[in-house]
Image (cartoon, rainbow, N blue to C red; front, side):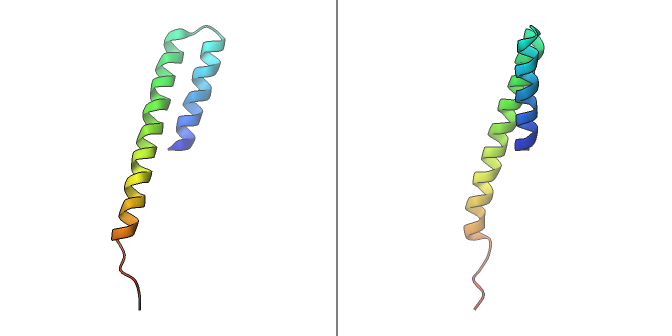
Amino acid sequence: MLRWAVIFLVIALIAALFGFGGLASGAASIAVTLFWLFLIITVVLFILSFFGRSPVA
């Protein structure tokens, strides 16, 4: 998911360079959304990793 966020960020930068403002803002908003979704999922999985497993004796 982080890879897709970076891809959309690069698309937004290239589109802004060539003057496609609408496409650039759309790609940038998708990149930001994917980044925050990645961050939330990462934090949730990190917290669940403490509670999900019992130690093996």
